[in-house]
Amino acid sequence: MNQIVLFWSFFLIGFGSYGGGVVALSLIFNEIVSRRGWMTAEELSRFITLSQMTPGPIALNAATYTGFRLQGLPGALLATTAVIVPSIILLGCFLFFRERKLFPGLQDRLDGKRIVGALKPGILGLLVHAAYIFGRNAIVDPITIIIFLVSLSLFLFVPRLHPIVVVLAAGAAGVLLF
Amino acid sequence: MRRRDGGERNSRGSADGGNSPVSRAGLFITFLRIGAFTFGGGLAMIGVIRRELVIRRALLTDEEMSDMVSVATAFPGPIAINMAILLGHRFGGRLGALVSVLGVVLPSVLVILGILILFDGALDQPAVRRFFRGAAAAVAAQIVFSGFVFGKVIRKDILSLGIAALALAAAFFLNLHPALIILMAAVVRYFLPSGERKK
Image 1 (cartoon, each protein chain N blue to C red):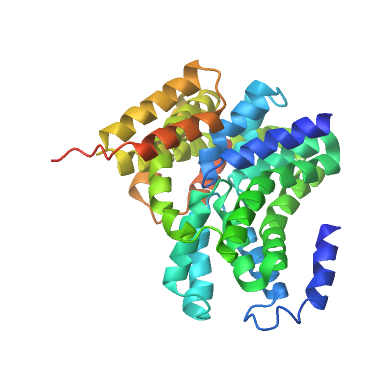
Image 2 (cartoon, rainbow over the protein chains, first blue to last red; image 1 turned 90 degrees about the vertical axis):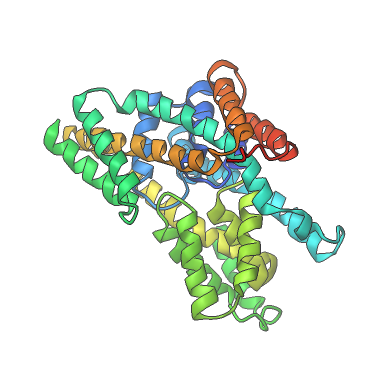
């Protein structure tokens, strides 16, 4: 029974994480902290920070981590698979229909730009929500406020700098300053 | 276990995939590399694929590539995984898609499992905790920055801004699933006309 809940939870995360990246954050917080109580907001925030320094989409990292925490290695594999399944089913259908020309002009009618454009407002709303939930735990004292502001200016004004460099430097600053 | 299964069929199935310019082993290795070196977002990965398949090996035209990117972003799921399915299928059929997905997923799964198994206790060390407190503030900045990027794209479209505000309010005050909020917002935006202000 627990396996079904774990699978379903990460199936939903995979299904809703358009484009991946931080877009999936609101969804991950909702499922893991609010709905299921599998982790505290603090623990999840720490994991998300960690996951910004490891390869792969956050949704996938969160699945492996949570699955392992709850049910060991089988849980990790189950949750990771669950994140991928929506992509496989939906794109599988798309490729199947296109190959057999069941819906001629399917590719043309599927205007990716328009769909992505339509997704943006909702994603922005959820991003602001995620920024609030995450920021509430991350920005708590003068030092974190300063690190936050310096990092934000770097992201805004030095776009060539890879985000991971900023995150690692902020971590190093944390070790020195706290 | 699934990986070994894929590998076996890979060697047996090379006859039907023989006319493809990319072998399944090649697909696996390519996506393994992409999976291992893509940090944070899927869009950086598209640059890597383009360099490898369009420019260096000329296996794909820019038009095919941009068609694929638009399908990969239009469908739910992380872009990295969707691109692996589409490209793997293009060059190696169903098995090619499976092999590519395994390749792109494997590095991140192994890294997380490695951290959990080898360094779990280390995460509670005081110095590591201080590191994470600093890094978390930068990640918060990263999320806010992503918000800026999305906001900039739609700032001239008053209807989109209104929908974003409603989605935000729904996330705060209604007990709705975020996936449902995104879906509803997208459907509404898709069928409304453009709300761009004319100067």
